[in-house]
Image: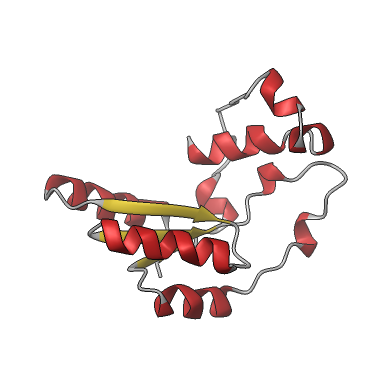
Amino acid sequence: MITTVKEMQHIVKAAKRSGTTIGFIPTMGALHDGHLTMVRESVSTNDITVVSVFVNPLQFGPNEDFDAYPRQIDKDLELVSEVGADIVFHPAVEDMYPGELGIDVKVGPLADVLEGAKRPGHFDGVVTVVN
């Protein structure tokens, strides 16, 4: 399990230099069959498969309970190991967002329909962490 952004960046850079393909499945943990299907597909089509397990506080609105979101890293590690993932990236919030973000990514009007209408700011948090 990789827990720091710096170590993950080092691994990705080395893989890119050597021409190794990397599949990346970003999750917030509490993995289920849908996640595991994506991991299996990545394992079958890439040299390395990385699964991130990061409960992103930026994806939670003011009326949503970040602290109550399920965290079951031991179970998640077991599940992805069973389907062949090579690396689990599980950083701390402080490592992902040290100090001030300095980045303000906005999705725009599309983020305000369907799920976004019920969860203001959710998709801005998604694109910020992926950025």
